Image (cartoon, rainbow, N blue to C red; front, side, top):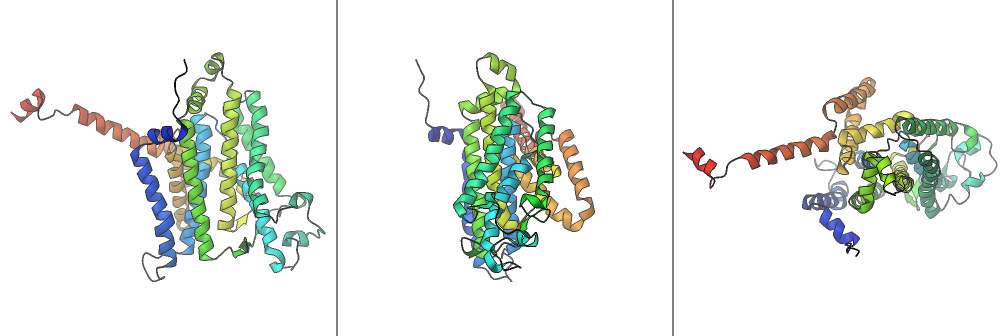
Length: 389
């Protein structure tokens, strides 16, 4: 007889601790109320006023956090170390960047219907793959489909061939590097080494307006919340348990009759789609996208975010992305020549002394404190009375 399985929402509510929902509510309060009020209602002289730079920095870090959570799904829960997630992030950014370039219209330097870089290269018409790029919905669809389809095709052949471990990491890094070299070429129609920039508007609204900046940061926060909730649902479900079993002992899972290909391919494709959406939100906030976003160093940095925050957790990668990028913002201003050395040292120290990351260290301290409380004698016990005597 089949046991009754609880529906998705009650199971998700039961699997998420109360502290998690409180933290989520506080995050919504900050992003939906406090941040807009601090930017729009308070004068610039107020110490609580938030500048456009801070709003953009928050939105950018939120997009990075989505990428880190997506990376944490495939690495922490499926055991797939990818060094190519920067490719999916960049493809989503380029897909939406095409729409932003079309929205410039005749406000560009050459006052042409074509993007400026195409006029400079003496192009006479848009390439076929630019058709429909003036549609907002088509741009969002491309940001979803392009990373998703590439991840699906690549993942199918890689997982079907049972490529894993360091070999899979090397192949994903090589794929990203090849894409970067391709996008650097002017004849590909993506702006060459300059990429896309000088954006003007989204849906007719100025892209640099304070309200638009707040809207983009709010959408980034919403995407992060939905990503965390979706990831929480997956890892606490039967699918998540099978995925963890594949991570720990794939051969045994196959012996039990499961097909690891389908499980790994789904989480791999989902992770790529989340990265594409994050890239689509990232580009209008920073105002530029170029092939340097596909550099292997960026993909390695994504893995560092996950390691610093805590591999095998959901909140850890988001915290790691925020911590590393806040430190990066400070170091690149104060010590611009030493940032990469600091990043490498951070990864080495985390690997040696914090193998479970920030969240893992916090969970260990809480468990140790709980064991101490359990070991302490209570007032009503025999040990407690002896201690009082």
